[in-house]
Length: 389
Ligand code: PLP
Image (cartoon, rainbow, N blue to C red):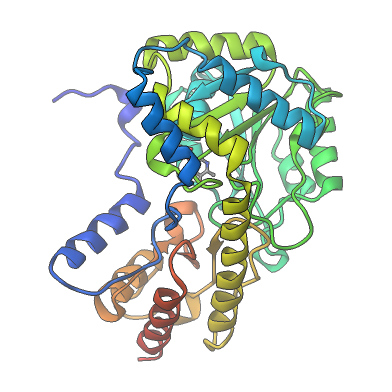
């Protein structure tokens, strides 16, 4: 089958590959500690489930406007105004099929042959893939593991060139948990604006910050209305991954174009899922805070367990729900790099981790702590024993 040239670099997502093999083993009855998935293990908020059920029963089952349910756009605009003093109105919000949908539509709207997009690395697998699919060229700016992969202005700005169209700033970051500080964020946004470079801030993990507080690019949007935009999601904050509701807020002409693309790609996010998302936004704060408190405990547990493994180095992740330890001291025969080590851990310790090579950091593996404490404890113990073998 002849496929379009643009698909030539697209493979199965490494995160999905691990999940597939772990599932296969689970189905065979093998007890797997699954640290692979970036998917919260909590149920979706009750209010969201109820609202979606009601929406279905009430016949809210038709196409909505392409940019999404008006009440949800309004509620999102108000939420950002209230929390981050951002200038956006409902008209500046597009509700999308997950944050992934928002990022992809933005890439299609903005990037073409010859455009460069700076991405702090290690980075989430889909950022460079989406840029390439749109025809652009990802330029990776490497962050420092010794610094907890903090998103620093210097290496990011050093990667800017005459062809740079945008920076994708993911704070807190997947897979590292690195975050951006207030001063670095300001410098990045200011320098980019002066050069006409957009800052696409993917703040999908905004609520999961364990050291200090989250610094949102939205706080700078009033000063830089033409170059700052936000991508967000209900997936992680509200444990609503399968609902597929995300959003973007940004300059109105761009949001109009994203809406037009969405109109041709998916029409709209699912109507009753948006009704559920609206209910979550309005009334699930208690549940969100309980989840954050639980992640905080799990993070302690993971950092302590990794700290007990000789030769493994791991800066405590400042945010998100991933630890990203350097395990390269355990490379050797049959474990030549992170992919082989991940396979070894799956077969030998029944622990699923994602090889760091998927994110551009082969010395590391990603451990998601979006799973129960018992699973974490048991899996980390097995992992330690398998590494020591
Ligand atoms: N952005 C980042 C950084 C992510 O890690 C993920 C999911 O893993 C997404 C976006 C996608 O989120 P959604 O489920 O809203 O598409």
